[in-house]
Amino acid sequence: MTRPHATLPAEHERIAALVDMMKQEQQLLMAADADALAELVPHKAALVQELAQLSRQRHATLGGMGFDASEAGMEAWVVSHADAETRGGWSALLASTAEAKELNRVNGLLINRQLAHNQTVLQALRTPTGAAESTLYGAKGQTFGAGAARRFLSV
Image 1: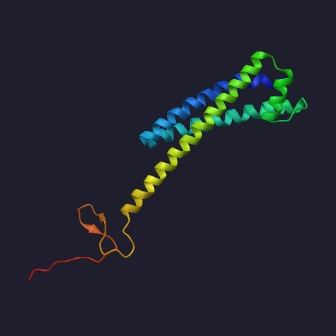
Image 2 (image 1 turned 45 degrees about the horizontal axis):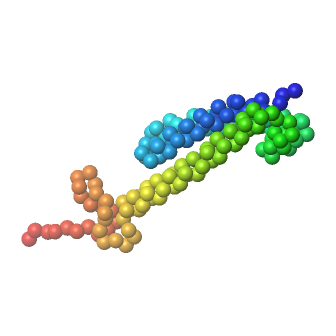
Image 3 (image 1 turned 90 degrees about the vertical axis):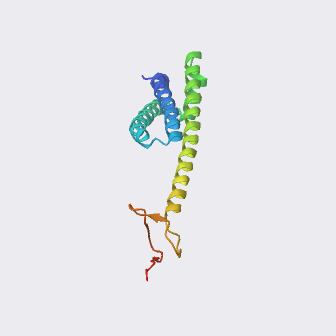
């Protein structure tokens, strides 16, 4: 019979890789490097899927043993059946998961800040409703938009 802690080494390896990737993501967000971020996203998604699969496997094993198929069930199993090494591995996994959650929170804030900045820039580029003049410029440096055209005639 598979033990609930059998997935812990693989889970810890993947969560450590995810934490490293999220730190890299944070640097890319601060640098506004959209191209590198786009390359990172599929790798991050794959790691998250692997972690979810390992977690489901652990939960299924716990459920088969009569424990809750959840982190609470793992806690109960660790308290009643695990040795010191397994307890340490579980604690390390929880700590790494908490670090990943915090990095995710901070990265979300950085994304929201960048989105707000982009919205501000886009709004500044738009001609305000009812404005007499446009604030946009064409390729030849002439203003264009919904505002009234100003033409000077030579007499």
